[in-house]
Amino acid sequence: MESIVMQLRQDVISRNRTAFSDLPDDVLLEIFSKLGLKDTCRAGGVCKRWHELIHNECLWRQRLFIETQVWNLQGIEDQPLAYARFLDREPVGIARDCAGLSSKDMFILYSSEVAEIQKVKRQRRFQQFMNASSQLWLKRLLSPYFQSRISHHNDDDNASPFRVIMFGPGLESKSTRGIAKLIFTRRDNLFEAVDMVPSTESGVGAGVAVKYKGMHIIHLLTLYSGYATHREAVAGMTRLHSSKLLVTSGNQPPFSVTPAVYRLCQSTDAVIFVMDVTAYHNNPIEISRCLRYELGAMLEAVHGLNLPLLLWACVGTADDDIPNLMALIQDLGLLHVGNGWMVCKIVVDELNTTRYGLDWLLQKILCNRNESKASIGDGNR
Image 1 (cartoon, helix red, strand yellow):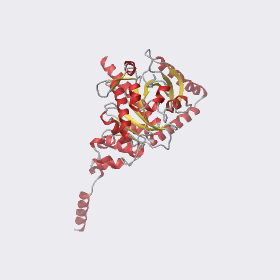
Image 2 (cartoon, one colour):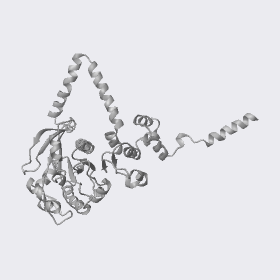
Image 3 (cartoon, one colour):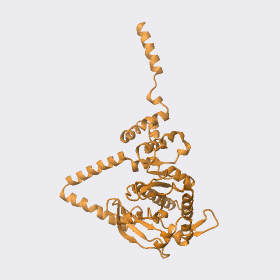
Image 4 (cartoon, one colour):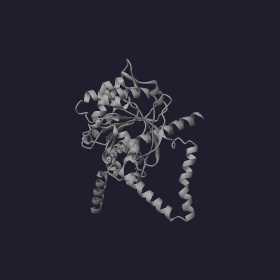
């Protein structure tokens, strides 16, 4: 009789016990968000349900908020309460991409844990490289050169230079106009100028070919509103009305780019809008209005091209105040912009945070090129 009672007790306990598989999805997502990257990947191989949860966008967006200095706004409007606890922090960059890089892609791009894994792999490869025989060592030493030459002559899309238009009042204002010069004159592992890029037949689009992180060649095509003496004398709406890049129109926005700039946009991969936000707190309404008009003219020119847009919110020194990025995004009306975009804080004296935006920008360009190649391949079938 005693044994029967004990068995009944165990049956009752087992029926009341909650198994791990019985937990709801939101609880499992919270648990998975606490795991390291390797453990998260391993968990994805346990069963079909876990695999689907590990690839859930909400999981990676939350990890992006917690573990990196970059946010992804895509999807937050659907679940505002789930991310309200993060909104009191101020990130280095905020992105919104309706059809492109997911939060998981961005986490891989910016995570320090991923960078550490890649660093270990590079060290292992280097050790294997050094332990090889002298003949194999020489072959491996020369192979990258020949591979790069072959890919160059084959005009591989992913090896060709990235053509990027850079424009905006931040290139011309007294506080931040040195940003272009600093990029073009640096000689380090972030930027290295390697060549000049001639202008088009219309006289616009001249720039500098810059090697970024020692790997990617970016043709930075700088557009200025006028000659240096003229740029120093005007600002705000006066600058827009006298700009050689814009013409007035009766539509909204009230400005359009000139035909020469429009043609240049058709052969570019991305756009960088450089803003001086040093004095933004003093007159946010007027400054944001001028920024919206100039940015709107360029967005109208690239409409339908699916070009990624990078906005640099620049200040001269680390002592200058940068406005809240979410407030700046709302003032510029970026939540209504269909193209993928990213806003980044930039301190011109340092330039270190430029990598956050440029890494995202180059990944977006590569995604666009791969999608274009795939659509061409489907059309040829």
